[in-house]
Amino acid sequence: MSAVGLICGSGSLPIDAADLIQRAGRPVFLAALKGSAAAEVERFPHVWIRMGEIGKLFRSLEGAGVREVALVGAVQRPALKDLRIDMGGLGSLPEITRLLAGGDDHLLRGVIKFVEDRGFVVRGVHEVAPELAAPLGLVGRRQPNAADVADIALAVGALRALGPFDVGQGVVAIGRRVVAVEAAEGTDSMLGRVTRLSKGGKLRRDGRGGVLVKTPKRSQDLRVDLPAIGVRTLELAAEAQLAGVAVAAGQVLLADRDELAAKADEFGLFLAGVPVAEAA
Amino acid sequence: MSAVGLICGSGSLPIDAADLIQRAGRPVFLAALKGSAAAEVERFPHVWIRMGEIGKLFRSLEGAGVREVALVGAVQRPALKDLRIDMGGLGSLPEITRLLAGGDDHLLRGVIKFVEDRGFVVRGVHEVAPELAAPLGLVGRRQPNAADVADIALAVGALRALGPFDVGQGVVAIGRRVVAVEAAEGTDSMLGRVTRLSKGGKLRRDGRGGVLVKTPKRSQDLRVDLPAIGVRTLELAAEAQLAGVAVAAGQVLLADRDELAAKADEFGLFLAGVPVAEAA
Figure 1 (cartoon, rainbow over the protein chains, first blue to last red):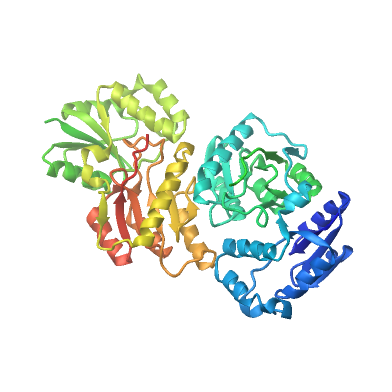
Figure 2 (figure 1 turned 30 degrees about the vertical axis):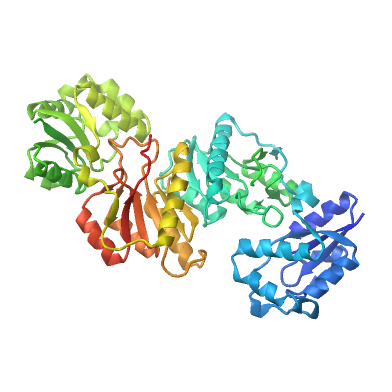
């Protein structure tokens, strides 16, 4: 069985993915980006790669018998002047220049094509390590009540309706009312807004209640850009006095599921994977 | 021709409405709410009414030959304990108590029914003074360019998609991307967010561009709850470096159209009424 190649950015996600893949009985090989990846990658067969060492990257992947590659963890968008293109990458310089000229979506789609043009198959991390994605059902002990379920359904509906408009991944519904919609500001900023509205008495609510629902945007390529829930999201949801967090099962990453379950319990939140038609 | 009765809250809207109705050759009668309405109501046939003087209100309207009534201007939601119910209102006390127990939409729908049950017809201010609502087309001299028109169309689409979810009246689109959706926080807060995102470099944009689009929410009863654009909205749109503001023609109030046109010109914004299917 060929090894899974992980091109590793920052955070614990690459390590978690490597562990899960190994535990499933499959070899891994990590290409760790210098300046981004954690030192812990060295627990696995690996190579350190500077941004731009494209020749070295592809030689290493081939040497390790990799055919499938996943991009995992966050990577700072490089400026062209910071790239140290190696000999193997020089021929690709015009292509790389074009990639960096566009927006993030353009860059990510370009990177996928770049890798696939060199004979590899690019997979989503949720495909090579399915346990990283949210399961269907509850994570942690807290249960949503009937009002929470109604709020989840409302928020999922609003997110689906916004799909064609490429609007953000998050909606907060409280008491059967959509009170916040995420667009360019991001989930954390939206949750902060809900907290301020709530403290300012601008939301009619009886104590704690309401949900954050997260799904991928329709235009997202799930192979490189899966939304993720971390402890910080749960913290902010608790500060916003929400009852819980629901995510699209299979399409949102829960980096360390056990830790998230424990934190959800600690914060008194439910955390649930719910069925949402895959972004297309 | 019977007089139009205006139940007057705060701001210049009641005065503007009264002027427009008189200029159209129709008599007006103003019931001015103490603590809310401006002293200028006294330029017109009027009566001052305390919250709760329901007997006096209806006697005055009848005495002035009013059959059609419009509610104009903002009114602070009264607490039941602050109401001074007069003799004529005492019989309605249980009904009033029920009205105040619900949300704002419930209250406004209840007020309409309360007034109509007493033999009056409730009209929207845009019906009795159509010139108060945004016209179709440009107000002021600035023209939107092709990119602005594309942003307007995108924002209108997002607002229509959100209609069934009763989400806010405003969307900001910049460079064919929805960057902010208004829900419970209100238009001003959303525009402030766009300014912060823009200053923080979180929006990809080449200088000034993008639009705010405002429409009524689908659940809004246009007779009592029409959204309005004021100078402050234009100021905040200019601070957010938008190219202009578009509103649903006929469904959004432009209180003083000449002043708004002058301010839009001064701020370098276009201001336009665009066709949007009426909220239903």
